[in-house]
Length: 138
Image (tube, rainbow, N blue to C red; front, side, top):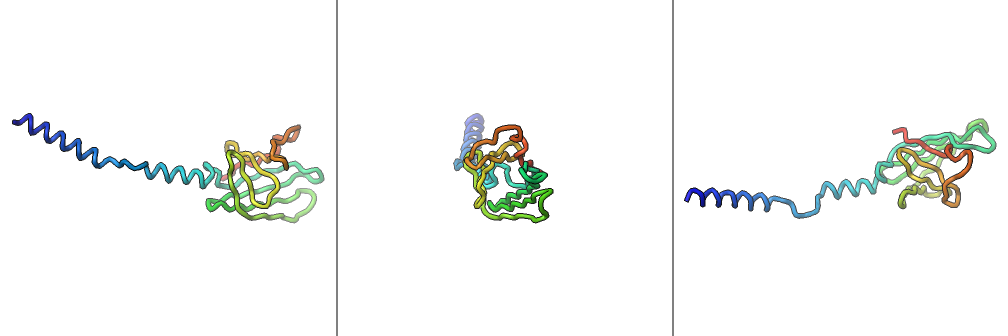
């Protein structure tokens, strides 16, 4: 009789334990996944670089990507003009390519940096290729 009570009590605990288990997909995992898509797997932040320039010292560039998929791009042609050029708009990611609305070139997403692609969407080749990089600063 005592053994039957212990077995019954154990079965009741197991049933309660199973019934409390959430059979739905893990909400936290879904939110994290959606967050990763939204933020572009950690791409949100500020990037800067000094890109090559044919008729100036360099192009000082700062790009900010926000959580709401908005970007703010600001650049100056160093040694040529003090004028600051600014662009704003939406950004999107397709595979590992970042596209900015109203900007002719895209960026390949790498670890904590963005590599600018040429106007046809291909990686830039040649001696200056490693200089077409924006590095994440925050």
